[in-house]
Image 1 (cartoon, rainbow, N blue to C red):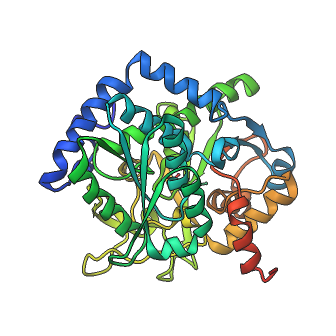
Image 2 (cartoon, rainbow, N blue to C red; image 1 turned 180 degrees about the horizontal axis):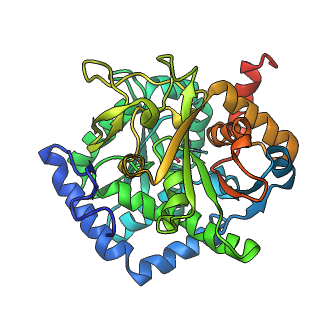
Length: 394
Ligand SMILES: *Cc1c(COP(=O)(O)O)cnc(C)c1O
């Protein structure tokens, strides 16, 4: 069966748990997604921007030095070489193009660290749309360079002062804007989370990663890989890599979450490893909550993995055993960050450094002739200053 079903459910997960006022914009988007995004005209235009503007296809690079180090064959899917330095652009160009074809004039988005905000502002500039980004006041202060970047790209950045003044409050504020203005406005969610149709729509836009990887590995190796490994925050780069291999049962999926200061502490963001089922941002999925059902504060050295929920399709993969989920600590991620930099001359973002660090630590699990594709979801330039500070280099 092709998932999700008509109600946007992946097994028991997903769905559309939204207030009455959000149903009309969600239904309009669902129609637009079905009718426009599947059309030849849309696909042709999307392909054009992805290849001519965003630098796709990204290379599938055989990391020989790193492979020798871990003792099996590792290919890196180089999303760090996509325009703006990460996979996020695949989704934002897709959604902004869809919005434009649906006749919208105005784009809104939430952002935490600012990466999704920058990718949305970029796509909006490209396609000539007005762009407003909601960002928690605390994140604004932590990521002032990204705020300026968004402004350079012509976006208006609004500082959110409610609640904890971080990502989840920015999401609430963006939803409020959307409910009021949906006639001319599209809300670009940054990962495979939120109410239906977002998880399936974002998955389909990010599936370009796995489709390319499959074609590339068959050309290079004449066979499919044994494992796919990717980091999981909301879950979009991992689902993008995994989904096109879903029916290839021999290809095993491994998702790596952020264990922060350790899975036995309160300071992590390992939703699938340690969370419980519940509803967050319109979707039934695994979430991190305390005994009273309140959303638990999260911690990770990487802002991109610092989210208390996860895409419902991952919850389904976990429940059915199609994928296995583990976690890497801040320390293990920092080790991965250094090792890839030194061995391959590639400075990875801290998010995929979790997948690299986990693989390094668990390398004995893999045999010499086994083959892995690891999603290098983004480049590490954005994290260099932070790592230098953590390590006392500044
Ligand atoms: C945002 C981000 C992530 C986490 O998001 P997913 O939806 O889980 O992919 C991972 N890597 C990079 C480089 C990011 O910018």
